[in-house]
Length: 398
Image 1 (tube, rainbow, N blue to C red):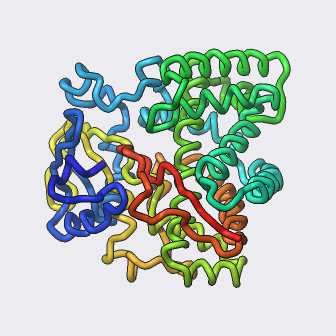
Image 2: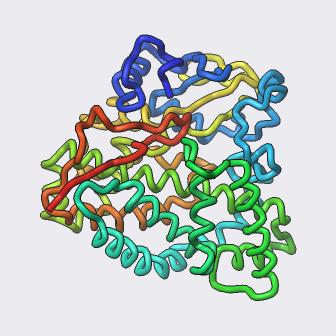
Image 3: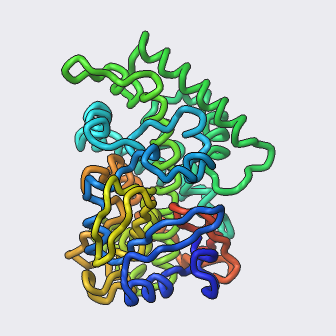
């Protein structure tokens, strides 16, 4: 995603970190121009990134974007234009606080502990079905996370093939053969509306039932707010967790001593997942922020309204904060990475992503003789502004 932003650098989709290192050393933030007419201030240093993520003067509401952005619809995904954009990533307090309180009733440690055995069993079954040469993304990570989301939302087994096909077309960064993203979005929206209506009359033990029934001080989510939150879970929750699994595996394959360490000491899986998140974050850049007033950050005055991008991946490798940041160390204990954000917009689904990532990588490292099935240079990488990861990851073992 940095190829147009930083002309002259090659291979930045596969490895943006040398470019980020250069940006950190020459000062931050930097005014950058991206493809599609996008522009903004890029924050790369850890302390600046942490401050920006928690600063209430940096709005997440796209209505505070520059006039030329709003007129051109820049930075707004299809679901926003379809009326599904009122969620945790596009609102500020007090509206954001209200939405988060109403949705967080599902994302409790107790509820996620109940989901954990099913996630671990699904990971075992999918890993057992892998064959040498299979794509770890399409054959393992993506169906695992799709199944997790179906369980969370309460999608019946009979509907999951259609549901996962629509979801893949909506969240994919590339065109899906035989599927139009707008048509898939409409089909998925219609299906989810039907799920919501059904849960109003026959609630279950799923997220839709929980947040449909949730009321705090007499307040409930409207139907549009509920649908927007479900789409946020589908879009953000699917691709980021798939990226965690794929990037984590890729990092371990590039650092075989760390792979062998995790095999020998499976009890390290929790610290391993945190370090893999820090070393190569599946969310490369946080979503756009817009200063409500001039904001001083890192010695630079950011003008009101001019877009701001926080490079989480760059901040996570800042040598001012992390020792030997370019080397993964699965035993690292001081690991306050920013891959799930920081401040009031800290990822609500972080615990679910961690549970799924641990279950997945625990199975992947058990594959004997695990190796890439193609040269690293042949891997294709997602051309996304926010989500990072390989499009596919063919592996061999045996």
